[in-house]
Length: 123
Image (cartoon, rainbow, N blue to C red; front, side, top):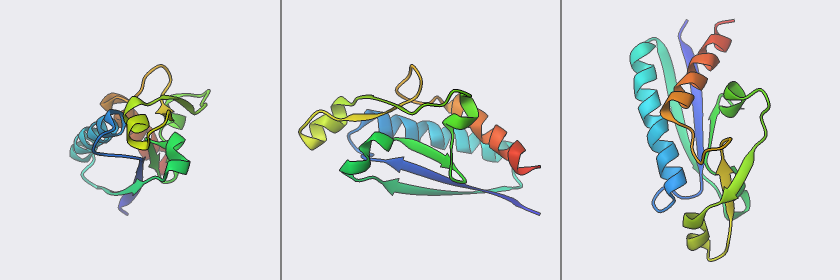
């Protein structure tokens, strides 16, 4: 039986916002490596542009509707910080999502979350 992982990448802007672009780049790099390691796993990715009202969720990666940060931090609490790029786009100060003490998840963190998610699917 083929295992499937549905990934959803939620973002506000993928052209100007460095936080969103970097997160998507790291996601793509992690997926490339993950697919090489797990050739029998089908991975589907959906990109969803968020509205101004949902900007605090940007950027977010969901694995079968589970936030990747839940695989990385037992004390999960979504955080946000001022995003100069999105503030410039909107014309007012806005706060976008951050991960712990970092603005972005690293490729290694995304890969770790994918591996933990795959193990969860195996049970």
